Each structure stands twice: as C-alpha cells, then as structure tokens.
Image 1 (cartoon, rainbow, N blue to C red):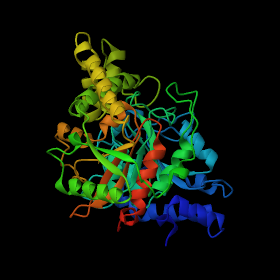
Image 2: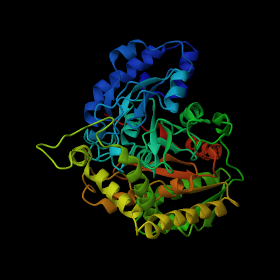
Image 3: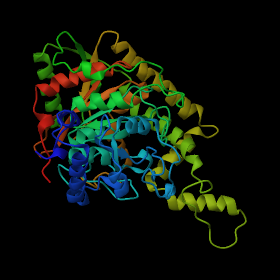
Image 4: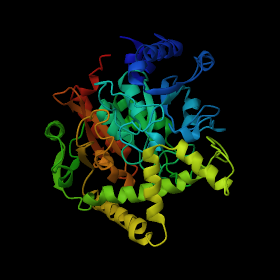
Length: 479
C-alpha cells in the first residue's frame, strides 16, 4: 500500500521500525496532491519546495498535515479564502502551529474553506469550491471542507479545521472521515482568525479515531495568550482507546429524529446504536427541549460576533485596499466602502449586516441579549442530561452531501445543514463525528457523539469501540 494511504499511527509504527523515512512519507503525499488535487481543489496553496527540502528526518511526529486557511503560520499567507486579506502574511505562529512544529509535523499547505468560515459547503471561497472526493458533483461540507476533502482523498495524512457551528463535524460526515470539536477552551484559539470568538474551536480531522486522539494530544493544552484557554492537564487520550462500552449510559434525544432527516441517515444511526448496544452500552430516550431554538440563537450570536470581529478589515493596516476613483468628500469612508465591497463575498456581507442589525441601538435587547439567554437554556439542557448520562448520540447532519450549487441561492436551507451540530458550540461541549455507513448513492453518513465538558476521552472510547466493530473507516475513495 502507498504511504499516503496509511494512517498517522501506522506510519509512526513504520518509522519506529525504520521501514520508511519522513521524506518518503512526504513525497508520497505530495505526489498524491499532484495527481488528484486538480479534481478536488482541497488546497489553495502549498508550501514552497524549499520548505519541503528543509523537512527534518529527526523529529518525533514527522507526519504531513493540512492547515485550514484561517490558522496563522509565520510568513505564510493566511487569507480565510477572502479577497480582503489578499497579501496578508502573519508575523507569528498560532499556538497549534507552534505545537505541531515542535512535534516535527510538516505543514503541507493551506486548505480551502468558506470565506471567514461563513458556510456549510466550501462554495463561499474566493478560490472557488472544493469538491467531495466521493462524488465530485457534490460539496465536501463546510467550512472546513478543504481539510476534510484532503484527508478523504489521501492528500493529507491528517488536517486541522475550525468549528464554530459544525465546521469540522459536518464536512467530516460528508467526506467519510473523523472530525472532532474539542471542548471550548481545550485548544488555544491564539492565531485562529476569528469568526465568532465565543464559539470557535480548532480541532483535528483524521482517517480514524486513533489518529484523532493522537492529534488532539499534540494541539491541546493551556495557553496564557488565549484568555479563554482552560488551565487543565491534558490526558493521554490514547489510553481511552479501548474496545469496551459496557455499562455506559447513552442518550438519544427525540428532537434530533424529526421530520426532515433523510431516512437513510436515520437507518444508519439506528444500526450504529445497535452495534453499541451489542457491546454493552444502554440507551435512553431523552429530551433536549430548547433544541428547536438553536439555529435562531446561533445565527444571532454568531453573526453579532462576526460583525464585531470583521470590523477590523478596513483596508488600513493590512490586506486589500481599494481607493475610490475621483475626488470624494469623505475619502476615508469611501475607501472603507470600496475596500469592503470589493473584498468581501455575498455571504460575508450578509452575515455582517445581520450581526450589525442585531447589535444596533433599539434591537440589542430584542435580538442579541435574547439570543444569549436562549444559549444559556440550551447549555442547561445538556447539563441536566449529563447528570445521568455518559454521552449523547445523534446524526451529524440530516442528509448526506448535496450537489454543488443546490443550496447556493437559499441561505436558510444552507443554514439548516448545521442543525445537529450547532448546539455543541452554543453549550461549549465536545463532539465528534465518525463514519457510520453510506447512502445508496455511495455518499458517507456521519454519527455524532457528544460528552460532558473536557470529557473527550469518553468520546474516544465510544467512537473507538464503534469503529473497531464496523468496516466504515476502512473504505477508500477511488480517484
């Protein structure tokens, strides 16, 4: 088997046995990108040949990794796939990048994404859409669609994404890979270009659960440069990889199995539940009564924070600047308007306007403040459920991957793609998506598992047990 087809833990075993070298692994990945990425467009840029030549053979975890285009790497472009950050090169590394470099990982390049992470399909990118490796007429999900597609297409051994409302888990589901949103505060956000600061989390996208545990172990930990970082020890997540769920109590929320879910998705989740029952887990029907308000609360809170965060992109300090033609009475204001009009895409403008409206005088209490109150109620639903449960299981997405362009003109339909993932961000809890089957069209289906804050080990235990008793993680894309 080609080296790029193997998981990170398999490659690390080969390296220990001196049956391969870091350079051979990197060359296999770069050859795969050269052969297939013109079809998939998972990457928006690769690092220079010079960087590849300098790659060290003596590092601890020398595994090539794809990096979402909103994570800062010193001296490398970071555009969030937006024209408004054209030419911007961060003068510092994100904390997760620093940790990866210390581990010896090779940063392959920047993966495609929805502009500023605004989207669920990776169609809202100034570089054009990424395609799903399982069906190139379909989207890979979003906003971390480039990272998920790269891992699924074997163009990266593993990758980093960011998750604000499902942007790691939903593309992982659509692309048939593993995607984890850690507990808010578990992984530093320092160096992540912000969308919604109280919701954003960086997390791993990998081939299997063991790789996910390994990568989280590398990037997790306290960081004094992130005021929301949790000062808690990071466990060895690989210790949770046991093929045993006997005695665990798992909840099934009725609100996640209502009208609108694809029957094939419902059937796959039902079959997954049966697998875990056979391994000794018990399942309990529960209610998360405020679930129906999650979409509305999310798109008030997230757009308000996006409006505030994106106010800094004005053409003055960095990125794109457009000067208006001719003499104007208000040249500075006109420069702002010209720059933002030229630099931001339609979805970015839509979300900024929505957020600005909900924060404006006279509407703050009716929209933003009420959204925060509903968010608290959603968190309390989970807090109450976890008093009696070890985990909760749901679908990751209500459907499999949809066609490119299918929802481009219907923002509300697009927003509903994240209906099952948003609540985890609003409540700050960890959640993982793992492959659990395929539709009759041969498109992947994802199973979502949620746990108590900072109990990623529970996610890994359940996910690993399911994975070891099913074949789905062994399926391969044919390109």
